[in-house]
Length: 173
Image (tube, rainbow, N blue to C red):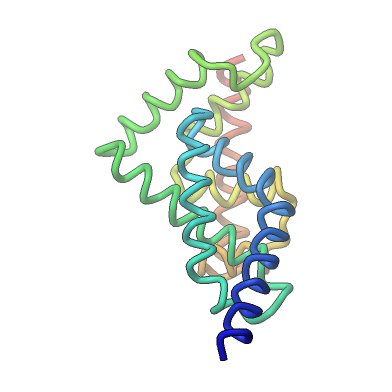
C-alpha cells in the first residue's frame, strides 16, 4: 500500500513538473498582460500553479490541460484584481500608470505603447477574450472552455474588443 501511494505521488509530481515546464511561460505572459506588473504577475502565476497542483488529480484528459490551466489563471487574475482595485476605473487608471512607469513595453515604439493602453480600456472580460484570441491564438472553442461562455458570445466579445482597440488607436495617435 505504501509503495503504490509513493508511486502515485511521484507520478503526480512528474506530471506537474511537465505541466509547469510547458505552460509556465505562456501563463506568465497571459497574466502579465492582464496585471501589467512583473511582481504581481509572479505572485498570481505562483498561485495559479499552487491551485493547479492541488487539483491535478482531478484532471483526467491530457488535452484538457491548457484550458484548465488558463481557467485557473483567469480566476486568479479576477481574484487578484478584486482584492487590489475597488472598481474598473481605479483598475484602468492604476494599470495605465504601471504601464507607463514600468518596463512593460518598448517605449521607443509609440504604437506598442498605444496598443497596450488601448487594451487597458477594455473590460476585464473583453481583455481576457481578446488576449486569448490575439496573443495566444486560441480557437473560440477552447476560449469557451476557459471562460464558460458560448462561442457566439465570445465572437461578439472579441469583435467589440477589437473595434474598441482600433478606435482607441485611431483616436490617440
